[in-house]
Image (cartoon, rainbow, N blue to C red):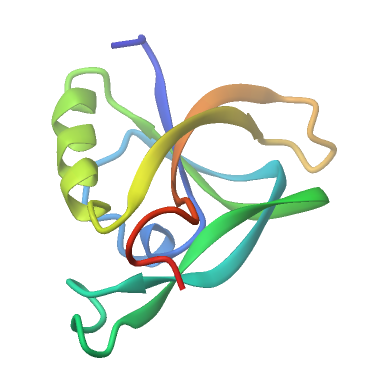
Length: 123
C-alpha cells in the first residue's frame, strides 16, 4: 500500500463517503466526463428497474470536478475493501492523475471507481 492513497469522488462519494478520511480537497480529473449511464440494482433500484447512477466516460478536453479524499495509511486497506464492496455493481478501480489547484499544477496519483460499458449494468 502506498504511503498516501487518494480517492476521487465525483458521485455519491461526494455527499456520503461512508469512510473516515484524513483530508478532503477539491480536485478534478482530465479527459473524463460525468454521465448517468450506469444502472444500480443494489443501492438505487432492482433488477427489473435499475436506478441510474453516475460514472465517468472518456471525453477529449473534458474535466470532471469532485473531491479527493486522502486516506490515513492505517485505514487505507480497510477503506478500499469497503469501497470495492460498495462499488461492486459494475465499477472497477482506475489509477489516474488528480489535479488539485485551479490551474491544475499540483497533482497526485489517485484512485477512482468507474463503470465500463462492458459490465452488465451499463445503460
